[in-house]
Length: 357
Figure 1 (tube, one colour):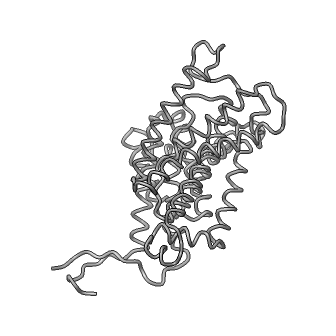
Figure 2 (figure 1 turned 45 degrees about the vertical axis):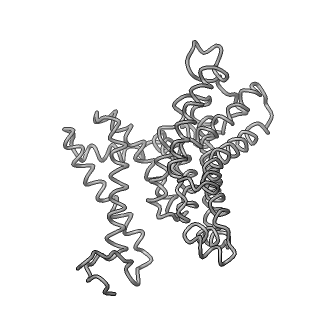
Figure 3 (figure 1 turned 45 degrees about the horizontal axis):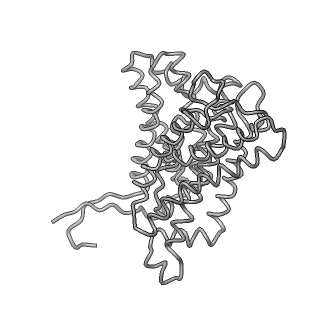
């Protein structure tokens, strides 16, 4: 009997990841052209609206940087766990908890001009995201609960908590019954980094996290222990590494990063707590982490590409009249293209006889 075998290719070039990403982008552009044609739009005009027009103005560049910040933070945090096969799918919920915690401080100290308010919000958001992820870590390590299901379901709980708070305790009493908090003061907001745009200093947090992640992955022995603890618990036990500690570390790091992304939203473009905190950054961050090959530098470029797709979808909606769902479709196409190209360029697929080597 013959069976299908998938195995890594030998002697892979260092530029293979770049080739995979480039080929995935080309395939995404081709599929995008077909998609625009289906909608009755000139494919070249559609692709220009998505990938070129956002970069032709200061405002468009600012919007790309604005959306890049949360994607970069979330993806860097998720990649730490993904490398150890700890699958946090609930970054969206952790983002919401981070936004709520930061907003509570901003509301409580409304009118404050203290320079410590924003750092306190950052710390509160990070701790809240970690605490939300800690629920999944506890259930995984104590009861072997699947962290994929737990983190995903906790996102729905976080959404309901957000809706409750905006309908009651945190609702703006002068807001004409709209489900939103009061607007935050300038001391509770990140400063603008590009004049005439909404791009703010939360991007710098993502860049700092990227540098830390690169150092952690490249030089830290803790990263090795984390990978062994997640990938091979048995081997970790004999080596004296704790697999439970690896799970806790992976989930706490990813939860804290997502919480920071939540702070960046309420203390950035929104300037208040709203029901629509995120357009799905927590889920898109998963795509960014995969597109970046779980490599901190790769994730930096992948977050920029995904942010461009986000902003380009809005531009395409206005300039060529396609539905806003095109953004999500292009994200899905990009992920599938990347996975397919990665399989073809980094793995070898062959048929072999049962029992043969």
